[in-house]
Length: 465
Image 1 (cartoon, helix red, strand yellow):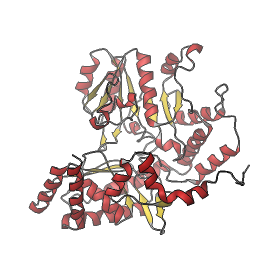
Image 2 (cartoon, rainbow, N blue to C red):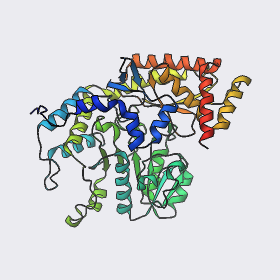
Image 3 (cartoon, rainbow, N blue to C red):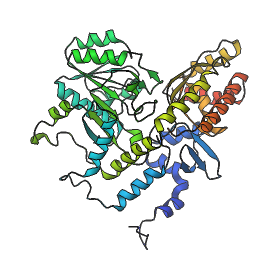
Image 4 (tube, rainbow, N blue to C red):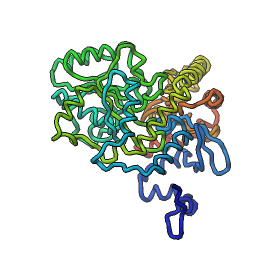
């Protein structure tokens, strides 16, 4: 049923037409005031009018290529017609949603479809975000094992709520929010360090990203399986955080599936499952863990979420999985991802500022490093002295300003750009990016306008000390 707007009713289109131009001022006044300040400093204060797939358009009709996908949320790009139709359908169905005292079909159907991609897992808890999926896994692991401590890897990112912050490997996010849960950080890939902590007997789990979002570092070959064996020997659990890497991002449905024999006890997904519309998170786990947490009718609500399993989120998730299967999204990620990675890797010998290209599928890290020539080395040192990470930002800015391509620096004080574009990226999109990136590298090595902008970044970095 379509409800036309009437006199005095809320009119979203009219509101946006009237107040949309105030977007940056409204944010500065009522939300995080540092965000518009940062965007204006680096020239990212664009006004995008519409979006579709892997592209944005501004008011003048200029086309921008999205190599960020909303930090991975827009796995299918923006406004995929199948997901849009599913949301229209679920709204028009006027379901008796979230009564709390019935069992609607959509959550069960989505759980069934997710578990079909995870045959060693048995049950699903639906929440509202990636950090909530991690919180669920931490709670379930501690309760199921009866142990308090969770291990995580250095440089990890698992979310920003208190539990997931406790397993966050970046001090800048943790500072000022203590006390947190008992935890211990380990170097990614260090099995000896893991074994040493497990011998203490109080470890509930290791939570790990198969490919870390910060810096795009992959777990070494064999690490996940060996860690799993060590954990199980000490009656501890392996938690795979697939919030960013899951649902095809790395060229398999999950990133842990690139290593034979790895079967995590708990798996966290979110981001792309939303279709870019309705926040959703899911924690998948083994039968015995769920049955221990929900051990009696008295404990039926011992862990729940007010908006978890809502019909809109479930419909979006079902539509996303349908599109992935019908449009062979994972196969596209493998093909297009290899075209992008190999195209970038071929540039390493050409540009001395380009140090490494790594990653899987459509999760790629481009790392910059200290050049060898005297002139470039002096400029590099100048940036590093002011603040590490400024060169990567110098690359990100002209990619947007001159070539209309949106990218991101992979983490604070990192000389790494992370590419996590929509999984529907085309070969033509890849070629457009490679051409633009080559032009920016030519400028960087030739001493062009990039270095003038570098002086602005240095002033800003010094002012913020």
